[in-house]
Length: 441
Image (cartoon, rainbow, N blue to C red; front, side, top):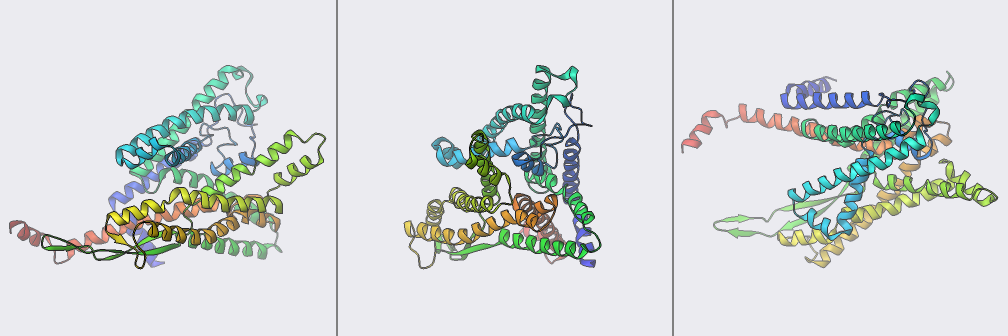
């Protein structure tokens, strides 16, 4: 306990880190406040948006902003969609591949294209959001019509741009990845209410079951942390080079490859496709018993058919996204260019094949574990856990929370290490007088 208190004292004793944490908390508070500001013209006291199917997934990621019809109703989801589209284009389109290889200037152009595409996606999604999620009976009569639709589209688009701006500011002046933090705070805002609701639903006899649920949740979180941090290190030896009178290179380094390189993206892609069977079945439901059966089966996320298809899609998308994220040929070329090689493996194509083999071997268990984590909420619901609390037993919510928290903690730790280094420089033998002597010499 004393060590924890000392760590917090050290964190807030660093002026730069303290300012960054306060800036982050301020932006996150503004984001949560905006999630409760209802669109002009909507009767917020009576409005109850849809929270089923894909709308329920969005509402979970946005912390209730979607079902509240708030000015941040779309949040940064259009920006994420645009980022995914641009990431896929950098693989398929030569022009974007060239931009990606241009370094900082190329990244700036890709960011500009992402922002423009975000506005286009936001306008399209805001029109669909208004038409499908805000019934006319919840809109005041004097606001109904074209004026409400156009003004709401502009406000939702402006809200998304503002959220995107806040995310960038958190990244620049705060701590952690801003966009990811906005998503995480939306997810975690529902956790206190879910755990209180689950505790209230259990009577005195069910207290032991509730404690058991908390223990299971703890071990599930630990498993996600382990699989998120797990890496396979490939040893790389660099040849010695003599330049002038000095010898460079010769040291051994390691190429870390994550077991779960794809992150949460395979689950998001798979969840997007899992709504298609029920949608298609709804089009042919009249007069078709098979269509009715398919619609009912794939509308229930706890059915074994749903979870089997869901798990297989996650495994497929994990391999697909890993292939996009990691290019063995490029890694082998960079190693060869820097006089690096894997011991026992020839440089060039054999190095590329070796790296690809390692990626395939570690991706399979990672993909299976990812699919198990994704279906954990349905299993928890099957065993009597409330639906709101079951969402934190796995799936997109848990992976995002764990990943963002670990990334933020790593950044805080880096600031603490910098503080220790500065303290060593001030109190060690390498003091100011020594610096002056070196400068004079």
